[in-house]
Length: 95
Image 1 (spheres, rainbow, N blue to C red):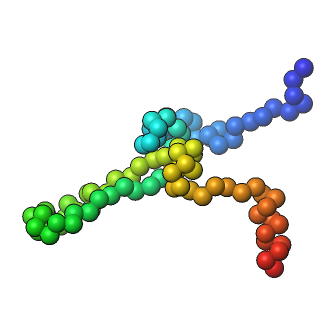
Image 2: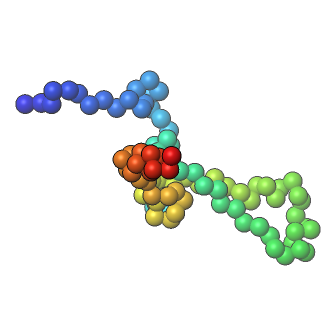
Image 3: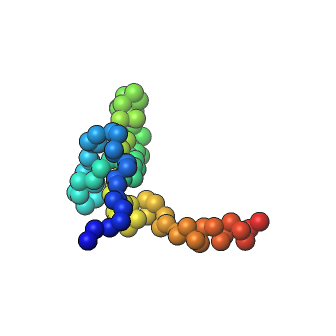
């Protein structure tokens, strides 16, 4: 006997197949809308090297990385979520 209703996946119903990306930390393939983006960059501290590099290319030392939800939580890219009940109770107390 089946459920009295049918569960539907509404997110990509009208979009078709969405792009998938690879998590930078664990390598898992995750839909792009589920990932959390962060930017990794490095700076050059040596003044001699900094003068040798053209300043137009310095911004290219930044790259965009994607993290799956579990890695983002483990590496503190996002804060752990709270339940809806605790969020609404905090709002009512603060007023």
